[in-house]
Length: 279
Ligand code: KIV
Image 1 (cartoon, helix red, strand yellow):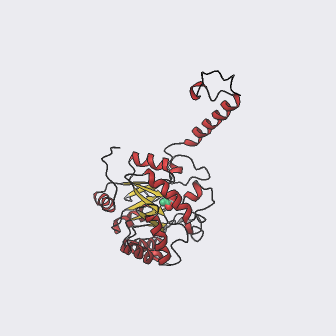
Image 2 (cartoon, protein in one colour):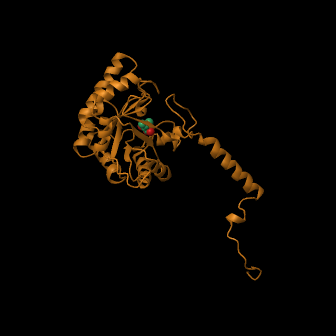
Image 3 (tube, helix red, strand yellow):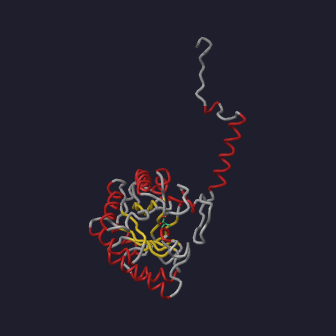
């Protein structure tokens, strides 16, 4: 990617929706991965609270804390020059009160250098989204399968499968759009429902398990790279299978260390002096 590439902004994302040029978003959790993605030309980087499951080893995203999110957002920020950086607000950091939501959202922007925060929920969270936007915090919405409240949704299941639940999703999308969100993640929703939402709102939609009709797509990078092995949702495409490569590299290292063939001379600071006088 050329250094001339300019920073991705909200007007640029809106223009991409208008022109029909699809937006790419990926999750990142550290400096190295963020730099690779940014240099490769991804439009948006999300420090998702999927951090909890794919990096921190929790069973769900629920235990993730503000401190954990900010720590990783700061590392990712240092790796990004162009992409639009979104920080995922963890469970209970924005639900208690609008003031607390603003305080926590402000930390993502001020301390971690995020361009926007993402919050999960529909109609019920639209007032909070509007408050954050009014106070100057760009907000990305997230509807459909919302992992923080997956238990209440009956598990990790496709949402909006019947007309009534599809209507509720559309209402939520419209309420969030009216609140001024700059983008909307739609997760695990049938393609036609996501398409209907996409054509009904002005914010660019970013789908994950929501078909090809959204304005853009997002995947969890550890899924795309074949690094998360606990489960693989239907919507994941593995663009690389890094697990066997890493496994083989680690096993070769262990073997060479145990055989004494690593480090070889080419990895050693060889000293020519005679050390026999060194006592
Ligand atoms: O936490 C996350 O990575 C997300 C994506 C799945 C959109 O919310």
